[in-house]
Image 1 (cartoon, rainbow, N blue to C red):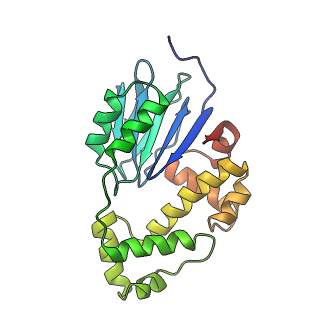
Image 2: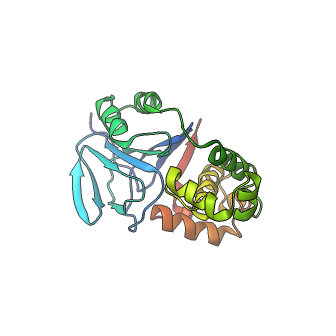
Length: 227
């Protein structure tokens, strides 16, 4: 049975360990790139996106970490999966999502089975724990480095090698993860901004648009967090 038409960005988001799964009718996005891998799985027919300037229409689209892309509006809902690169290999994840039935529970289970144990340097893992515990506060990269007995340049090289992110971008990404969850839970960008250490809702909204190609207010208005 064909999926029923839905207004853009109407749908639900489920947060899992190291990945999130949305069921939504995508709207147009500005070109953007983000740290997480992304899989777009059409429930019926094909999904449409421009990836690195190439227009693609496929049942399943796999978008690697940091690749520029933009989605096109489609009234037919689809599954959008966002996965941490340190925990998932994109090709294996895309194959698993392609093989799974077009149901949220089945896709979430397929993704969870693809999750691989993290093999991070203990110093990077410690920094991630510290960052997550300090997201509502100002975080100093030099302090993170000192906490694992490294110079800032050494920590930058280590994070670049293991996560392909600078320390500053790593902190911003962890803030955005928390802010997205809080925005949908509390139905407020202002509350989410303060919880995740952004100066205000305008700062958070700009970060949302830069990383996801849409305004944070659009997601808060139309998406619902599903447990």
